[in-house]
Length: 68
Image (cartoon, rainbow, N blue to C red; front, side):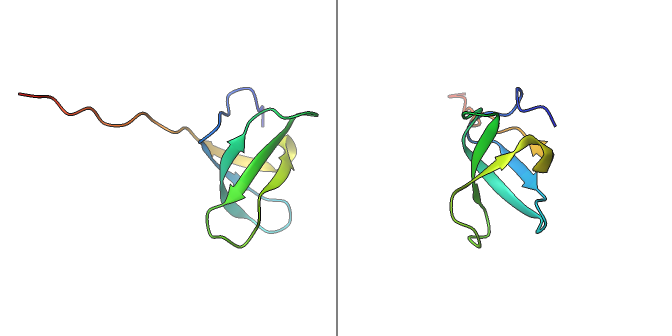
């Protein structure tokens, strides 16, 4: 998967032998890797290569509340 569309705060599914969901802490690090933290807490902060990213979900902005 191309890393150019992945930003800090997005969610990704990683499959590097043990599939898990993770939040991106830093995007496009040196050597085309992401720094991620697993959502289930089973992994510490780690780096992953593009070939291990199998799905990507964008973080959206906060919902706006109108004064009406």
